[in-house]
Structures are given as C-alpha cells and as structure tokens.
Length: 348
Image 1: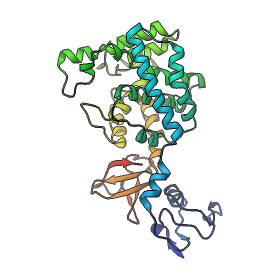
Image 2 (image 1 turned 135 degrees about the horizontal axis):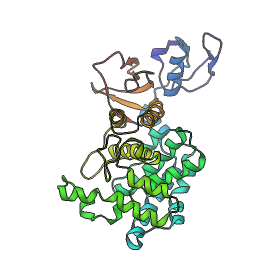
Image 3 (image 1 turned 90 degrees about the vertical axis):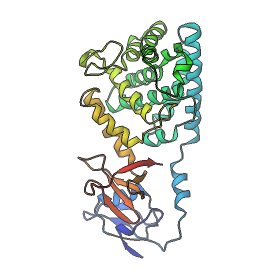
Image 4 (image 1 turned 60 degrees about the horizontal axis):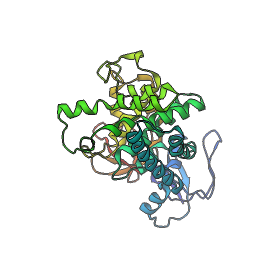
C-alpha cells in the first residue's frame, strides 16, 4: 500500500525500492523501517513510499531490544568499575597505584568502545545504583577518550586522555567516607576538604606515573577559564588542554548521574548547561566540539515533550541543536518552530 511519509512508522516493511529525486537509492525493497530510516527519508525529501500490509507492532519490545547495550561491553564496564575501586584502595593503602593495574582496569573497555559510536546510548545504559565515584571515573575516562578522537588527537594521546579521565578523582580515596557519601548540603569546612581532592590526585599520580600530564590533568580539572575554579584559581591558557577536556567530561558525567545529594539531569539538559558554561568557564571550542558530536547521537532516541507526549527524534536542527524535529503520533513536530514545546527527557 502507498502512504505519505508522515504516516510511515518504525516496523513498516518497504515493498518497492526508494529513490530520491536525483535517482539516488535510499532504501531497498524488503527493508524494515527504523527511526534512523525515517530521518533519512525525511532528509531526502521523500513524499510517498510503498509498504507491505501492516502487522500490529509490539513497539516497546522492539525499541528495547534494538537499544540494549551489548553484553560484552556491559561486562567490560562493570569490570572497569570494579578495577577502579581496587585502585582507590591501593592509593589509600600505598599512596600510589601501579600503572599496570590501571591499564588492566581501563584498557579492555577502551578496545570495545573504540568501535562504539553511540555515546548517548552508552551514557543512558551505563548507570548503576551505587558505587558512584568509581562509575563516574570510568564514564569520564570514556568521554575523555572520545573527546580526544573528536579533537583529532593522535591515537596515543587518545589513550592518555582516557587514562587521565579515568584517574582524575583518585585523590578522593583520601577523603573521609562520611563526606563523600553525605546526602545533605556540605558545610563550608566539608567543602574545603572536598576541594583538596585534586591536590591528592596530583600527588598520587605524580608518584605513580612518569607522564606528568596525567597528574596535571587531575590537578586542574576543577579550574575554570574565568578564574572561579580551584585549587589555584587558574585562568585561560594557564589550564592545560588535557585538564580542559577532563573538566567537560567531569561535568557531563556528574550532572547526568544519580548521586546521594542530587538526582541526575536529562542528557540534553546537561548539554545545554555545558553550552552556557562555555561562555565563561569551560574551553569554548572543546565544549562546542563535544556538543556537536553528541547531538547527532540523539537521533532515533525516545523523547518526552513538555506536554507529556513521547516521540522519536528524527533530525537535529543545524543552527538550533537543542530543538530537533520529533516524530510524535504520526506527525512531525519541529521544535525550532513550536517554541512553546521542549524536550524534558531522553530515553533509549
């Protein structure tokens, strides 16, 4: 049967090859349409398509199955979290860590997510209910690795960047556990204690690594371009590049994770906050690179709108990336036009 593109749904089967107005082949006969295909057809300005007779879909089941994290990657993530915990214990007991132990904990995960392009799915999937500090360290390492790739750094520097992110909070091993796990607001004295962790990290990593940049990245990851950071209130170029990368990844992971004193924020909301911080506190070019590489990964994700409806992100807007095109109940809603609506939640 022949239908308009606005009536096409995920799960429909194409009954004839689809070509655009220039004769470019877009989809083959027999293809089962997914949300990425919807976006592709829309981008090619296809108006009508021919599909097989519909079978009532089990939409939620297929959506979940399509977006499950590969089990092997999940296992490697959990192993890295467990390895991180052991490194923290080693740092507390010995005042340093073994470089080989850090590599054994983190490198196997690197080999798997080198081929994983959908960072958003990873971030949505990689959440456990406890062990926040260790999970956060692994996530920051993962994001730092990706950022180094996106910034076109060498393969060696990508690995170094990932390791710097993985170990940036190792100094928290020296902080009192009651402060780390406190559910209420910290006192001024407790916050001053928290602010010592970059110094602790620097000392531990200086004693553990010949690569001084990894230690400096940990020391400076809470410094801010406008001089409002800590521990040294550095400004602009005084903050080394690896430190600036860790700062962005640290904020993104922290804000998008559940913590004892703060509920996680939605991933798109966190990107908006990073954009705001890029004007004063974070490296603007690096932050925009991060945002521009993350945004396309939201295509195909489920999105809850401010009016309560759920839809699927079909296309991102080139000049207004936080207001994409969303497919809702058979209709397309352009949030760059419908300004009274916005996305409240992203889900796999």
